[in-house]
Length: 335
Image (cartoon, rainbow, N blue to C red; front, side):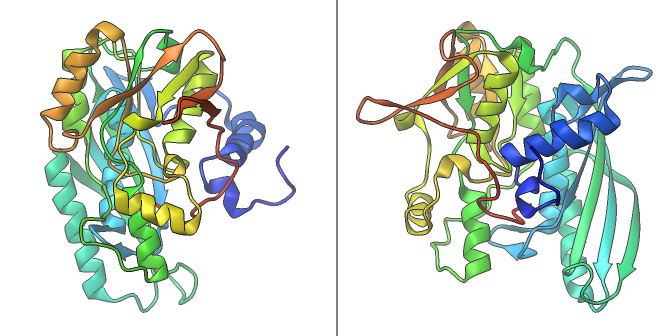
C-alpha cells in the first residue's frame, strides 16, 4: 500500500514506484495506452508514432563523462528507441534557479545540442522559467519526445515467450558509480564515467535485423534488476540470468563492495536489455557489437516456463538466488 506521504523512494523505480503508479497514477489517468506501462506510448495519428516525457533532477549537475543536459536528451531519445521508434523531435523545458552561472547553462545547452546532433533529432520547442534562489537546486530539465514507430515492430512484454534469450548491451552500473563518485568526492579511475549515450541508431539496426524482438528496455532507475522483474511479471514468465555473463567493471564492483550495493540495482543511462527469439539472438548480438554502444553486448540469460513472474540468478558456484524487485531508493537523484 502507498503511504500517506510521497517519499524519495517513490521516485526510485522500484517496488514503491510501482505501487504509486498502480494505486495512485493509473487510477487517475487510466487508459489502454498508459496501461501498457512502457517507456513511451505508441499512438495513432497520420501514422504510428511514439511519444514520451521525462524530467531530470540529477545531483551533481556535472559528473564524469557528462552533465544533466546529456542525460535529458539521451534519456528521452532512449525511451523512444525502446518503444521501437526512430526519434525525431524533442522539447526542452528549463527550470533555472536564480543565480545559476550562465557559463554552466551554456555548457549544458551545448551538450544537449551535441547529443541531439548525434541522435539525429531536433530540439524544436521548449520553455524557460526562473525561480527564486533555493527553489530549484541549480537547474531542472523536462523533455518530451516524439518518433516514428518502425514498421513491423511489436514491442510489448506480452510478446515475451519461454525460450527467448536476454541480451544486455554492455557493462552495468557505470552511471550510478560516476554519480556516487561526484556526489561523495570518491576518487575513481578516469575509465569510470557515465555510460549515458543515445542508443537509437543501435536499436534501429537491431529491429531491422530482427523485427520479432519482443521487448527493448533501458535499465535506468532500479537497474537491470528492476527491468527484469517488470518483464517477468508483465509476461507471466520466469527469467534465469547467468551471473558469470553479467558485464561489470572491476572498479564499479569495487564501489559496490565499499558502499554495499549490488550492480544489478544500479542505474544505467546508455544500456539496453533485449528479449529476442533464440534463433535470432546471435544475429542481433552481432548487430549490437558492430555499434560503439553495444560492442560489449552479450547474452546474459533466457526466458523460462517455470518460476513465473520471478527472476533467478545462477551464481558462479552453481546455485540460484532470487533477484527481487528493488524496494526503494538505493541512490536518489540519479537522473
